[in-house]
Image (cartoon, rainbow, N blue to C red):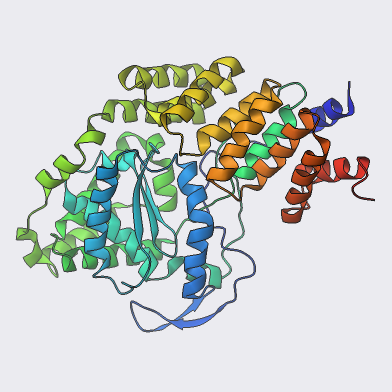
Length: 442
């Protein structure tokens, strides 16, 4: 067995729960006191407003890609933006660079980075009933931004847990397996935080205030929270992430109802915007059976019921063969069952369906390494790197690919670039050993 194979086989798999989402806000942020934008009182924050915006620019593209990118429907994304703009103009921080996109992810959630970059999953959008509920959802997320909850958490030093998003997508493959596994995990480094219940209550209150200011009926917030509470009871597995990052409760629904019936009672004669919502989301609602099947498949995947998951994804693909998310998920499911050749077919199909989105290229690259085709692996990994720069794991895997192609100088550059970003862990150890054995380091 070669040195390469021996080292590869010695690397242990390190599986992490599929969607643990925590903010990675950086250990170097400075703490200090600031005036709360929403109350005027003093709050302890760990980021300036410029730093909040910088976090968005640095990490939001990575997380949005982890959630399979914006849907390929400009009209749906524009509709979400229009509703968001109507509300964010009425917030306490209208100057923030808010942005909105509907994501291809099937799980039920919405989230916002501290500078206002927001993602709404297609999984939640197809379950809403009207524009007022959508306004409540966006208003809640805007509440987090305006109350500076992420900055406060950093200021309070509540950052510690860092975990990769997504289970390992490739089995142990001869020659490349361990290295591929580690590189895949390193790439999934964009994380979101869960908020405290007090944060959630404040975001609810602000969200209801903002949606009313923007001309919506306050009962939209009641409808949104009733939907989520109902779904938590009926399908808890499908709402696991939503409820871990946005803890819901009957108490919060009842508080929204009390405010709607008292403080905001006059707003409830306003139009819910159901017809407008249905018209603008019709293209997504048409594929709701596909989204539902993908949701069930992902729940089965999380439980390691891969045959059941594969069946669900086949149902989704039968209904919508060119669905990007379903193709990527099927590829991941097959790879978990060591069906890498079949998995590659779906990953390659996904790259053709949505060539501008990065995840299918990364998946194709990883699968190609597993199939001992470093040339094809490098092609896809390099494409990923150009679409979405900054993934340390991909830098490492490009080095592995180039080494497999016999291009030692080029591989050394990738390993050196990786070491500039991280000098700990198995990938760093491997990169260092290669540079030393090739004479680039002493």
